[in-house]
Image (tube, rainbow, N blue to C red; front, top):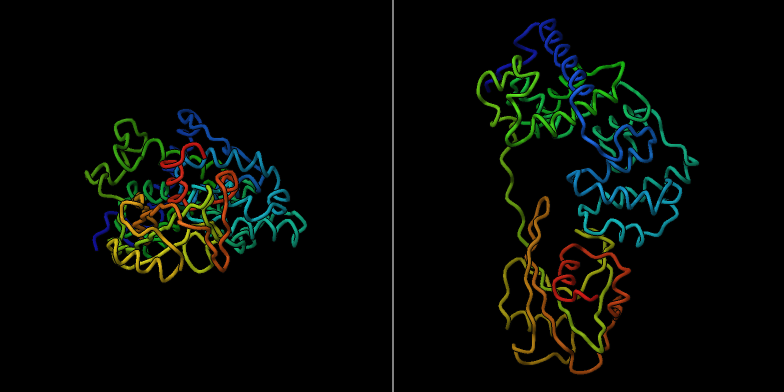
Length: 371
């Protein structure tokens, strides 16, 4: 595999010199040219830093900004977050996706508040042991809150370092992560690690962008390997994506006197702990006849008999490793239902207080705007 620049091909002093030049130019840019404003920027409170980093995992800044402010308003301290109920926290998180982050957030908040007496760990090796905290998040907290010399490595950092050094090792492979971590740490300003890490992420977000980077105005272009070789748009490199699992969810929306049945989705699958409608799942599309047959077997009741007595609504949601094809089958039941199990029949007002998967929440917005 061809690498335009690696520490194996150049002497260590040449690599050190290039990293030092990169660091000096970056810090100068950050001090004079960067005006990217974010509510957590410059924050020293480890709770707020940790909260922002968990929210921003796999989430764009523009989307996460509002969630961050809502969380702080509702849970101003880690103790307030720890004492809140799961349903309250999940409802606040609703629509942000990747709900394992929220479950980890609840677990870690309660661990710090109750087991550690509210004292946030201050050492990298302790921080990285927290549930839901990986190397990037631990480095961010350690450097921003405690000024410790740990380089962050997120998508912006991968992209900037890959282009600047001309590295085409896939960033999602172990050898790539190891190589980029070495470059990131070598470039770090150990005297101002938090400021350097913020500068590098801001630079990737505003100058060295994924598409249409501002190369002509970049103060690093003269020593950027990708710019010199005309390969800016090809870096960084990722491994080919794996095929996504396809799932078909058929949600039943039976109404009786304005109420609809819901239960909490169980552990071991997507959207654990959120509320959902009665569900028929399939690994392939179902036609109406087959769906009705399964529906009457799974949820015995007196259902409407004619197809035109049902209202259909379809949507999709793309998750990290799977795609959900959802259909909603709404109808009015012919008599009062008697269902066993965990289902609760709720009115629209009751539904407002519950956390739902984005698919179901979008369905309510599209079909029942008054709820």
